[in-house]
Every structure is written in structure tokens, then in C-alpha cells.
Amino acid sequence: MNRQRRPRPLRLPVLAAGPVFAVTTALAVTTVAACGSAASSGSAAGQASSGPITIGMSLPMTGPVADVSKSGYQGYELWATQVNADGGLLGRKVKLDMLDDGFDPNQTAADYTRLISQDHVNLLLGTFSSLLNAPASAIAARQGMLYVEPSGGAATLFTRGFTDLFFAQPGTTTSLPDQFVAWIASLPASQRPATAAYVTQDDPSASPAVAVFRTRLQALGVKTVYYQVYDPSTTNFDSIATSIAHDRPQMIIQGAVADDGAQFVRSLQKIDYNPKILFQTNAPTDEAYPSAIGGAASANGVFTAQSWSSTATYPGNQGFVQAYTKMFGAPPTEDAANSYTAGQVLQAAVKAVGSLDQQALANWLHSHTVSTIVGPLKWDKAGDPEGSLLLSQWQHGTLQIVAPASAATSKTVLLTKPAWGNG
Image 1 (tube, helix red, strand yellow):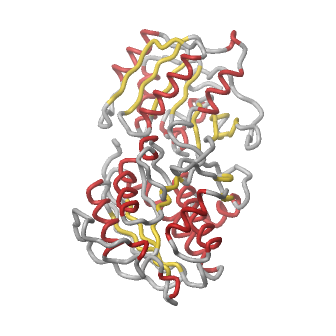
Image 2 (cartoon, rainbow, N blue to C red):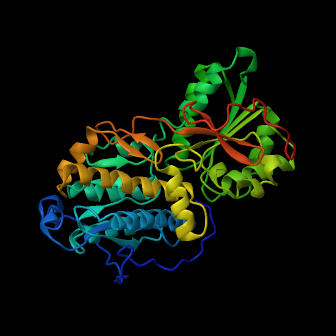
Image 3 (tube, rainbow, N blue to C red):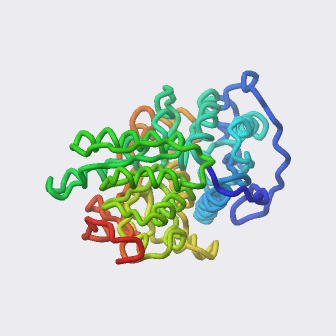
């Protein structure tokens, strides 16, 4: 991550629509060997209690992704508020117990250990990025607790044999290219790009996704003319852009994580190199993306993949957008939606099972489909969702869904990206 570090105040755990509870400083715990199995303890199975159901999570509220985490936590807050307004879970209020890990994987592991062994939370919700969800989900698995994560789609997370991990998005790294590759395959041979350049941040989600793009597009006859993995600290892409322009690819695929997407585009603009097709992960989903690269005209034609869109017509989505905007004074981000979705998944399981039995909750999710604001979610035995992300494209100042057809907000796809600043 190369976002500027900006300190953020630690958000307090809340009993939504009720009093605020204080946070005590997290203790660094380096092992969970001494902890008993939470799934069999009274805290995890504590549905007999009449007190609140406590849901624990550790989020990077300070550090390089603090902005992402702020809106993500607000998604959790809105979900908890609505659950409590509707009578709670199992007739009990929901309380969020949130710790700040500062985007440190070691602190994330310590925080989830504390949440289970010291705070005795009843349920868990996940954090952000594969980097942090990897240790957090391992702690949860070791303790036999259900773990629903809002982000962290690296394929490696679902190859560890865990049966209580569930990803609350329609697809992961492996399926991220599905809709885009299908669109390329649907084009007449004369309209397909002949050559492609691939550039990606060294990130556990971005770089594997770009590798899948490359493999699948090569299978369609698209020749690779450039491939580069860059360090997460990279902020100047001038040399990469110059090298790409020298090879003159018709298509560029970038595994962008955050600001690196706009920074790369600005380097392309400096040398006035405009590919026929540009696909970037993550970065174009930010509403500030057009202004970061010179305005809506410059963003016109850029493709990306989305786990969620404010314009999607899935049940409850428009109500979520309205409620979030009213509660926080601004439209929800994709991260807020992903957190809210994770809450929906957890709520559906608890409501259906009628208890907080961790194994029963996991078993139910493995055998059922959950209706959410990102569409219906169904998982394989590893917790990997059996779906794909939305393919979206910036069109005249609006990020439009162009595939699948069932969710599309635009029936038109711009086959050739206009020159920077035009269209």
C-alpha cells in the first residue's frame, strides 16, 4: 500500500442505537496455544444469556488504509444499528467490539486472540485485505469460530483447509477476470486486442489476479508484450509507462490497489500514450478516480471489476444506499457495502440456525444461498464464493455496470477508449 499515512482516532466499540462502551488498550498476545476452544465455550455458545451478543473485529483504523477502514467500519455500524432496530439477533442486542491493528498483521493476530480469549466475543467479523485476513482467519479456525470476511480475496486464503471461513463478495482473485475475459471472447476476432501489457503491484490479491488475466487472454490469442511487478512503495510510474509505450500494446491490464492506479495513468498521460483498452483493479471504483486523472473525460472507457455497485438492483441495495447516506452524510463506498454484506451473511446464518453454535453456523452457510446487497452468495467447501464480480466501465462521468447482463446499468460498451481528456 502506498497511501499516505494519516493518523485516525480509534473508533469505540458500540452498542448500536445505544450507549457507547469504552475500549481498553489491546494486549499483545503472540500465541493462542493456551486458549481453549471458543466454539465449545459458554461465550461462543452463549445464546442462553440475555445480555448483548458481542461481535468482535480488528480493523486498520490507523495506518495506510485508514480511509478504507473508516467507511468499512461504518458499514458494520449501519448493519448493527438496523439489526438492533429490528429486535437484535436471537432477541438480544448486538454490540460491536472493535480493535485497531494499524495495518499490522502481527497486531491483527494478537487482536483476534484477545477478542476470543479475553473479551469472550460471541461472534467474529473480518478485517480488510488478504494481508490481515490471513492471520485473523487462522486464529478463528484454530479456535473453531466462524469467520466472515468483507475483503481479502487472494486465492491462497482458501487453500488452507479451513471450513469456517466465508468471503462476503461474489468472487475472489481467481474469478475477478471472468466477466472481462468473457467480453473479450465475445468480440469478433477483428475487434479483439492483439497485444497486451500487464503491470501490477506486488500484492497478494492484485498480482495473482493479473496472472490469471494474462493466462486466460493469452489463451484467446492476445500476445503479451510487457509484464512488470512493482513494489507497493512505488509512486513514480514514468519509467514503466515509457517502457510500455515503447512496446505499443493495444491493451493494458493493471493490478492497482489504491492511488497507484491514478499515478500510473498520469504517467501514461505525460507521454500521451493511450491504449485501446485499459483495465485496472480497485482504483477506478473510487468516486474520486476521475478527478485524480484529469476529469471524467479522461476516465471515459476505463474498465474495472466491482464487488458492489450503488446502482445494482439486488434486493435491499437501494435501501442500504439511502440509509448509509442518511446516517453518515455521504454515499457508501464499496468497502462499506462489503462490510454490510458480511453482516448480512452472519445474520442470515444466526437467524436460520437459531443459536450461536459456530459449527452449526458454518454448516448452514456451506449448504445455503444468502440474499445480500451484492446479490445471492453461495460458497464451496473452502468458503470461496461461487460467483464472479461485476464488470464496470466509466462512461461519460458515471461508472456503469456492463456485465453480467442481469445486473447491467448500460447496454453499451465502449470498444475503444477515447484519447485522454476526450469523449
